Structures are given as structure tokens and as C-alpha cells.
Length: 340
Ligand code: AHG
Ligand code: MN
Ligand code: MN
Figure 1 (cartoon, rainbow, N blue to C red):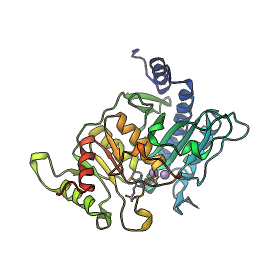
Figure 2 (tube, helix red, strand yellow; figure 1 turned 90 degrees about the horizontal axis):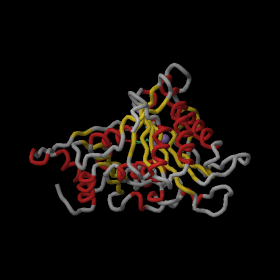
Figure 3 (cartoon, rainbow, N blue to C red; figure 1 turned 30 degrees about the horizontal axis):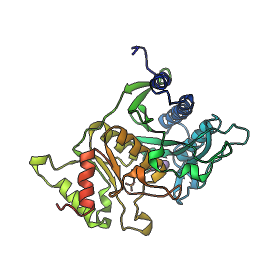
Figure 4 (tube, rainbow, N blue to C red; figure 1 turned 180 degrees about the horizontal axis):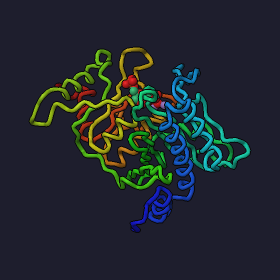
């Protein structure tokens, strides 16, 4: 392979040569997402200097206050994707219903669901945040506007999934089912350059990531797992290291590169938290596709995340994701098959 700078666009074209079934539509779609990521990254890095911090004074579908950057990132992604002519519908964490493609734009054969700004609680304190996206081929016939059915597909039907992490550097990590590849934004000339080709997650790690403040609200199996993880036992490398940033993309990315498990179980703090906090369509599914392509595992404690058939755009799911052996140990505790 040429040792010339392998930008995201060049890499996708190389991939299209290797996998003829991949069509040029991906190049356009990923370029639209990469453009949105560059714009968001520019504003994230300017946050504090421009009026983009703080609350927007609006609320999202959950009644959660929206940060200005939530709304800004959503607007940038919708605009960047809507006019590319590759989509027939979209959905976003920040919009209650399906987002239609403007009438004047030709309908494409893909749909995209996304979390425009993940880790909103960390925006104003300069901690890494992200964007998460997931792409499906439409399933409804014809070439008219996309339907809800096109968006509510099980995760195994994804054709592309990825995230952007706005951290010490801005990285875009994606998969189209032929491995996981990471690109780092070189701001000097505004290109995403291949920096992590074919990422594989270690089969077992030493990190567990969970918000332990919910401990009293967890089911017994989850409490047993955490007690096990924290117990000193040099024979198998415990206690595990606790690392929790509070931005799913940042916690996931660290564990993807170093190994480990991220856990967000359901809890009994309130009825709407029985399935946890994270959303299936635009948080769990895309990261589950990526982690499986990297050799890891993602489940709701009982079922493979990618096998769950969504009923609604914003449905939540418990999420246990990361190194395969770590997820399998957590599942054994959660299912009551193992005690500390
Ligand atoms: P979002 O900002 O898109 O709503 O996502 C926030 C999520 C996720 O990024 C993170 O893992 C989780 O919220 C943290 O939740 P807790 O504050 O309950 O730990
Ligand atoms: Mn999120
Ligand atoms: Mn979000």
C-alpha cells in the first residue's frame, strides 16, 4: 500500500476496491459525516471562546435540558446529511420523530441514526465528548421517503457504524463489517488520516467502567459482579481498575484500545431506568457493531445487542460491552450463574 498520507477518503476508496459490494454511496455518506465532525470539532475546541457553552433553554424528548452544543451538533449533522442525496430518512437523539429528507433532495437508499453529541454533561468542563452514528440500507420498497420501519432494524443489519471522539485529538472510528479503522484529524490541513488500522480489542482487560453511585439500585447479580471485580485476588489480576469518564464514547474508546468492560445496567432508581439510560439505536447498536468487528462482545446481560429488534426510536437497553471474556464474566454474574 502506498505510504502516502492515507486519508479517510483514500482509505474508503481502497476498501471499495477490496470489497466490490461496497458502493460509492459510503464514500459520500462518510464524507458528509466527516465534514460534520470537523465542524463540530472546530466548535468544541473553541467552546469557551464562542457562545456555544451552557444550556440552550430547550429540552429533548426525555425532557432533558439541551446544551447549546447538543443542538448545534444536531443541526450540523442533519444539514450535512440531508442534502447529500444518499439518505431517505434520519433519526437523532435530539428529535422525537423520524427526520425526513427535504422534498427538493433526491431520495437515497440508506438511513442514518445518530447521537450528535454524546457526554453532554461533560461539555462545559472540557472533558472528552463524542458523536455516534449508525447506517442501514432501507428495507421499505420504492424510492420515496424512508419510513419508521427503515429505522427500526435490528443492529445486525447495520452496514456502517462509527463514532467521533473530541478529545486530546479528534478521531473518527468506523466499521463497514470489514474490521475497525481509526482516523485522527490533522487540523493543519483538515483531513482525517488513518492512524489505527484494523483495531482489535484485547480478549480480556483490567478495566471496568460503571457509575457506582447507582450500586444500591442494582439487581443482586450486578452488585455481585462489582464486588467480585473489586476483590483483591492476584491469581487473576483483581482488583480491576475503575475508570469512568461519564462520556460513553470516551469510556468505550479507551476500553477498545486497552481492553476492559463498560457497564450500564438497568436499575430500580425509577421505573424509566429499568432498562438503564443508554439508547439502543444510536448508542448501543453502533458500538456493538464496532466492538464485535474488533473481536469483543456487547450484550444486554442476556441477549446479543445486535439481535434486539427495536420497537421505538428512543428505547433504552442495558449495555455490557468490551473485551469478550470480561463481558462473559459479567453476564454469568448477572444471570445468577456465578457468585463472588
Ligand atoms: P448523552 O450526552 O448523549 O445523553 O449521553 C450521556 C450518556 C453517556 O455518554 C454516558 O455513558 C452516560 O450518559 C453517563 O450517565 P451517568 O451520568 O448516569 O453515569
Ligand atoms: Mn449519548
Ligand atoms: Mn447525546
